[in-house]
Amino acid sequence: MESRLTVNLEKMSQVANSALYLLVIAFFLLGHFMSFYFHFLTVTFFMLTLINVYYLYIQKHHALLSNFGFMAQIRYMIESIGPEFRQYLYMSDTEEKPFNRIERSEVYRKAKNSDSSSAFGSLSAFDHREIKLRHSMFPVEKSTLNSFELTFAQERSIPNVFTITKPFMISAMSYGALSSNAVRALARGAKKSNIPMNTGEGGYPKHHLKEGCDLIFQMGTAKFGVRNEDGTLNDAKLETIATLPEVKMIEIKLSQGAKPGKGGLLPKEKISEEISELRGVPMDKDVISPPAHKECTSPLETLKFIRRVQEISQLPVGIKLCLGRLDEFSDLIIKMTSQKIHPDYIVIDGAEGGTGAAPKPFMDDIGVPIFKALPEVQKILKTHGLRDKLKLIASGKLINAGKHFVALSLGADAVYTARGFMLAIGCIQAMQCNSNTCPVGVTSHNPKLLRGLDINQKSERVANYIHNLWHDHEEMLASMGMHNHQELSESNLYIPAHY
Amino acid sequence: MNKKIVWTLQIIVAAILLPVGIAKFIHSPGAVYVFTELGMEPAGRYIIGICEVLSGLLVLTEAFAAMGAFLGIGVMIGALIAHTTVLGFSVQGDGGKHIPPLLLVLISCCIITWIRRKQLPFIGKTF
Ligand SMILES: Cc1cc2nc3c(=O)[nH]c(=O)nc-3n(C[C@H](O)[C@H](O)[C@H](O)COP(=O)(O)O)c2cc1C
Image 1 (cartoon, rainbow over the protein chains, first blue to last red):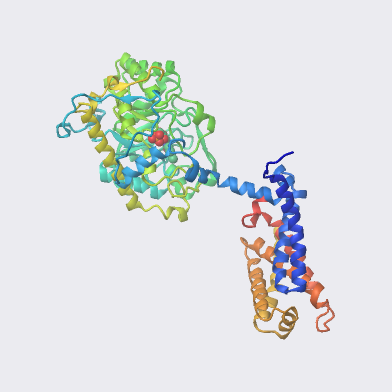
Image 2: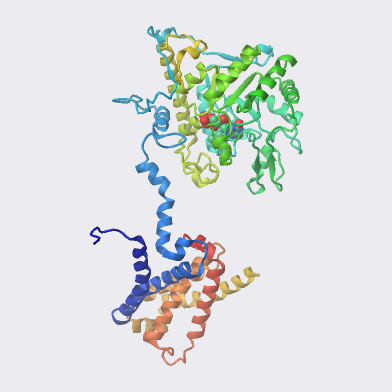
């Protein structure tokens, strides 16, 4: 004998489906004998029944609806709010991806300038898989630290070198991926804190320019904003952008960690008049971002292209790539040495990098993660004598000072973060950057959703985040017994054997 | 093609529902008689009047026509129930002249709702 009571959802739905018919009859009788007002319910339930009959007997798309009727819709409805419920209630602080709640709230706290101390103990896993920093037995006084300075294109002795005074910058995010308010909040925050912001590959930086911060103009593989109709470089347009006083450097994007070796397609439906103008593309045609620049067909051609951009722009010029095949990368570096052409900086974007939209296999499975890529890049650059001729920038989930220090110790001169700054302006990791529904208006162009993103308020958050990151930098540097970021090296790291 | 049909039907529905809806607000004797018979005077008359006017207005829009027609179906089913159970088809000896327009609205609303089913809020995408 079965003595346990169980919930049988199948039975429940059968009962519910029959109850619908019975309710129609019951309300009809009430309406007839008690009060005609009951017929409001008769009609309502009659129409519900009609819909249920459609689900049960007419539609053929969903087996669940055919078998269980409207009760299956309840399942779908509850399922559809699952992500929110998991995030609010059930997911542990260390579980979420790409950034768990601890990581996110650290950024939020910095951005809101609230107390940053925690109690009792670390919540991160001490499973001996993570790289840790080695402190010094003889910490130094914070007041004895030297200020940070990194000058791009110093080695080429051009007139327009560019110096940054903090070792972190806002990574590429295009207007298009980001909303206008988000771009302006970031740009205003960058201006307040005097750090540069990368424009991303969104073409002419109209919204960035409104705030007057230092800009790094990025040229994607479609060369939005500086392209000819066939996708090749338009020298005159590049020159115009390069002469804008705010534009301090030019970055040629070869690839990106979230979708290395993959181009993209800008569907014509998304090309508004503004986008068409800023990006320099026609409104009536889909525009293809090729997987690589048209000019860059071989290492030599790539170098020629870099030289061409350096000559037209007269600015420091960098390249951004996600590390893929080592032989190719070595080859490119060897050619740089032999041709005496090199970019003024290289950005290594880790495979863990973010994006507005990319195909899943590219996000998940292609490219080398940043902490693995950096030592390899560093080694190749050193072997070929190029390390002190250019600067190295790292990116890929480097959203707190600890991660910054690991990257700097592994060879980077500075770091970039994109999503760190998105979090600072209120990103709640709703994972909807590609659907124009971002609930906090960071990536949505819907005016109703943009409303919530107050530019001035959020720019203050950006400035706070930068300020507090810098505070951590100084504290950590002092505890490691150093006076300069340049002293950081691999010997400051504890790297687990099987890392 | 569908667009022409559906708009013709929408205009027919509005042309019938708006006057009868408004008649319920200006205490037209016919309406008062009917709702007295149903035991819903005067609140029920106003509620149904609101529903009819709302439905008549919504079917004149592109975005909300499906909603209006869906509401129209509900009101017409209610009216059918009233005629079959309480009033009889001929009201005050008028020989049942209410019935053809009633059926016309009901059928039109069904067709409009079906053609525009994707526009129904919330449940629309399930059809
Ligand atoms: C919404 C969004 C848009 C992005 N747009 C660009 C872009 O236009 N060009 C580019 O090179 N990288 C783009 N990226 C990648 C970032 O610049 C960065 O390389 C990557 O996200 C790694 O940094 P993070 O982990 O700190 O976010 C984008 C990332 C995000 C999240």
